[in-house]
Length: 505
Image 1 (cartoon, rainbow, N blue to C red):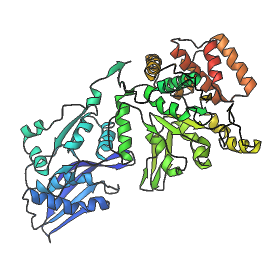
Image 2 (image 1 turned 60 degrees about the horizontal axis):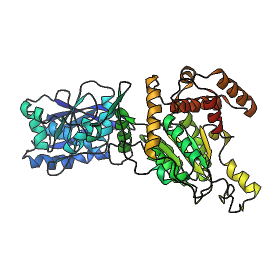
Image 3 (image 1 turned 90 degrees about the vertical axis):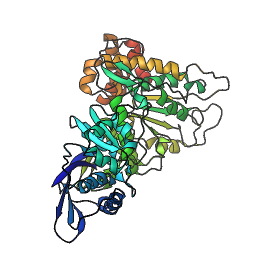
Image 4 (image 1 turned 90 degrees about the horizontal axis):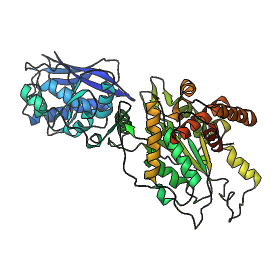
C-alpha cells in the first residue's frame, strides 16, 4: 500500500488527508471511498484518460483509493493528481514522503490549478512547519509567496511521475522566484509592508469638503468606522471610494489572507497592494453579506471579504433592518460566526465600515437652495431605520457641506496618504497589534494616555451627552489617531475636542 498527502477545505480551514491505494486480485474496478463527494467521484474518468496519455495500462485488478480520515467530507478536483500518481507508480519503488500534491488533471494529462489550492496551502502553512507542496505551474507563483514553505511545480502527469522518481529533476522544479508585488517592500517595526503608490482615484478631484477630507484621513489612519451624511451630489460616495487609496500599507500575511478569502468566494486569486473594498447593494440578502450555505460548509460573505479593508454601505438606511442589526456583532467583535447543524465556521471581520446617507428621503434637508419636501414624520421614520446601538459603533460622523461652484481642491490623496503613513508608523512603533480603531479595552488604557485637560473634557462630555462605555472608548481612540497625525505622544485638549466634533449626537 502506498500513500500521498492531500487536503480538503472546510470553509476556511484545511484538513490533511492521506490518499491511500491498494491493488487486489478481483474483478477489475476503480473505487474511491472515504466520504468523497461528487466532484471527487467524477475524477475517475479524468484520471483514466490522463493515465492513458502516459501509456499506462490498467491491470486486471481492483483498485481501491481511500481518503483518510474517512469521517471527514471531502470535495474538490485537486485530489486528481495524488490519486493518479498512486495508480501510475503503484508498482515502482517510490516513496512520496511528506509531499502534499494538488492539481486537477486534464484528459491529455496536463495538470491544472483550482481556486481552492491557494487557501488550502495557506491554511496548512499556518499550522505545519517545513511544508512541501507539488502544485500546477499556474498556481506555483502564488503558492511560493507564502513564507517558509517549499513549492514545486509540474505541468503534466508525466512530469509529476518523473518528479518522484528522479531527484535531480525534482530539484529543478523548485520555485525560487517571488511574486513581483513582494519585490518592493519596506520594513516597519520588524514587519514587512507593501506600499501602494497608485492613486487612480484622487481626493484632488473633490472640490472643497476640507472637513470631510480631514475625517477621511483620520478614519484611514486608525481604521475608524465613518458615516457621511449630506445632500445628493455633495461627494459622499466619491470620498469613500478614494478612501481606499490612502489606507495604511498591508503586511505580507494580510495580502496572502486577502487573496485566500477571494479564492474562497470563487473569485480569481490575485495579490493586490490595495486593501479590499466591498460595496454590496442595499438589496443584498443577509446570507450574501454575512455568509451562509449548507450544513456541510458555510460560504464566505461580504463582511469577511472586507477583512483588512473597507465595507461600504451606500444608501445606508435602505438596507434591510435584519442586515443592519446583524452588522453590530462583526463591528464589535471583529469576527462573524456562521453556525450550521454540522459545522461552525468563524471568519475574521476587522474592516473599516463606511456608510453614506442622505439627511432625509428627498435629500434636500441640508440644502440652502433646494426645498425639502419631507414631513417631520417622514424624516423621523427615515432616521429611525438606523438604531442607536448601531450608531454607537460609528467612530466618525461627518455632515458634508453643499457643493459650491467656487470650491477648490485643498489636498491630494498623495499628501493625505503621507500623513496616514506617519500615523501608521507611530502606532506600530508603540507596539500596537491593532490600529487605533480596532483596539480592545486593555489597549485603550495602555496607549490612549490623556492629559489632565483632555480627561476633564471627556468626563464632562460623558455626563452631558450620556455617553456609553463604548462611546467613551471610541472618543479616546479617535483622539489617539488625531494625536498620531499631529506627531504627539500625549492626547491633549485639542485632540479630544476634535474627536468630540466628529462624534454623532
